[in-house]
Length: 173
Image (cartoon, rainbow, N blue to C red; front, side, top):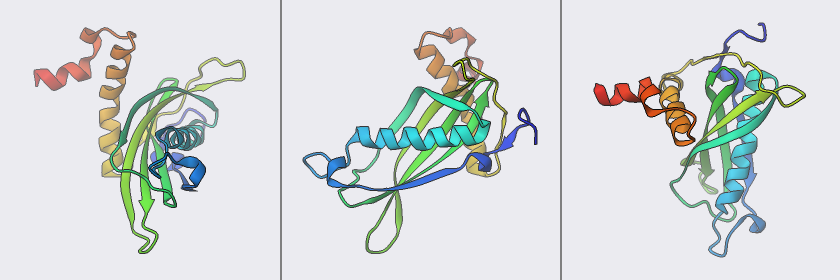
């Protein structure tokens, strides 16, 4: 496989598990949101690197949902993959799971979408390979990535709303 050939989503899979320790929690015994963001950023960066085999930098945290608290003593597993690539940038989707200490059941409690850019040794953006989704869920995330990218660029003032063809298509039906 050459550096510019599209790669399957599975090539970017990254998974980490962390124990929530007292130093990671607030006064209610819940995981600090900032600590989770740090863990998400690291795991997402591993995914982006695995996809493009380059140094990557975080350029945006597009979405983070905190759907349920994560408690002191919980085992937290983060699973990430590159959902789509755009020239030099990659959208990375991460799901956060908490493992029940008694049953071993894993409960999804958070998700996040980060954007990374691949850079060379001088810090200049470099082209990344495309993504080949392999599952139905990966395909749904791939399909929605362009709309999410257009919204992020509009909000950052880097795209005019009238240029967001994918977003406009949602409303023009």
